[in-house]
Image 1 (tube, rainbow, N blue to C red):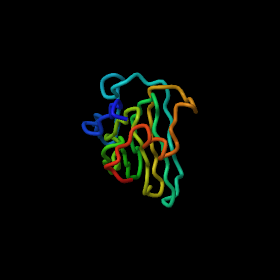
Image 2: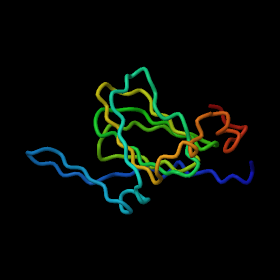
Image 3: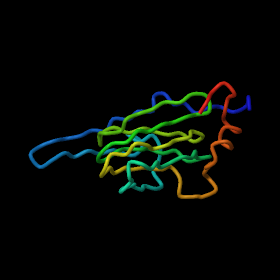
Image 4: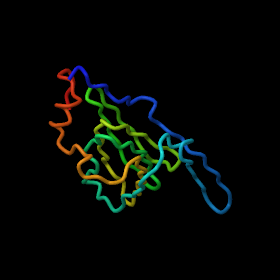
Length: 145
């Protein structure tokens, strides 16, 4: 376990550029400028009831950028040593999740829309979905869930 290099969970915030005029708000992100990795996949999450969570996993290889396009939710990330929480409630604000970081999306406001950009194509074997397995790989005995 001492050989594991824990992914950073600081300096993960990204602020996109936005322009507002009488027609509305335009927010954009450019790959390899605003998003610090090449995008291979994007997906969005909608219609999540506030009583349910999404995520609840880590990736072995994939990096992700998570943004709340509409509404709000709480993002909790954990690298095996420490955890952080973020309120995502603005379309020009995103969090970059490195590989080897457990993430959970929680407390969804009604009507929320989440946009996720990923550095890898979907691969079911690339996920760690069991928290105990995650902690056996990345965890420290000094941290509690």
